[in-house]
Image (cartoon, rainbow, N blue to C red; front, top):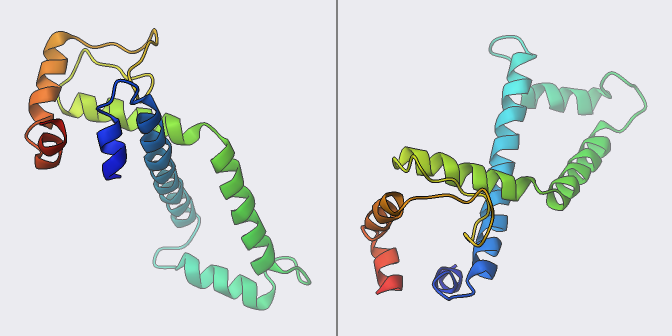
Length: 149
């Protein structure tokens, strides 16, 4: 991580930016997926019921389709889902979505990120005022100050 943060300061730091975006984008994507799945599961059960208990009961008793191995099909489904995620562009999209959400939270109203490194893209936009504001905020962080100075 330390080396990647230093790599962002190099003129060709786009490799470091993409690596960080893919890693943290995958994390954000997985957190969002777990959140959506937990909300969907909670909506389909009685108040106070536990999804974990319900899933365990289905595995033990054979679930709705007697003779099937629900534990194995659940594991295969999870593996297939993880492979689909790793091959998709969703992690990068989640990272960029979070970058833009955070820019709004910081008050950078004229800034939009279309890629993690800031190189030419027609939808990368900002103003000198927003960049100055972001720089002042970033320099308040001791880690950023240590890397930049």
